[in-house]
Image (cartoon, rainbow, N blue to C red; front, side, top):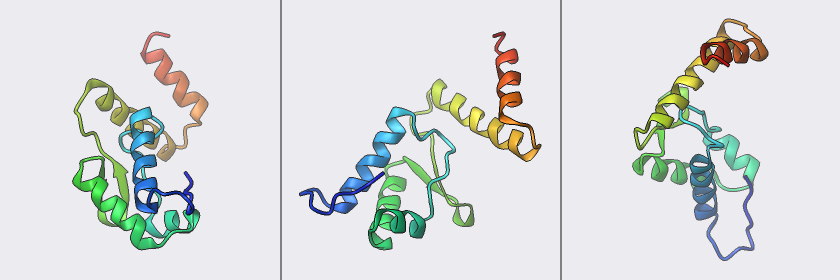
Length: 116
């Protein structure tokens, strides 16, 4: 993600639009954790207030959930089967990591469960 300070589009709108595009394209899936406000502001070279405002608006619109100290994550807004499956896949990936299972093995297990 990057912003163009010379653009006629506000920095706030550039960040908001890019996050929504990443959600809609599947680059950011349900359960994915967003960077902290300070981290993303630093990466983009914008004020923390700008990122905080984007996160608040995205939360009001149902795109993200703020979980206090656990950060801001992508939420499932439409309740589709695909989003439910993305959430389950995210939970599976987290659990595999917690158990120390290499990603190649976790993928193999998932493929086996799907009959592939």
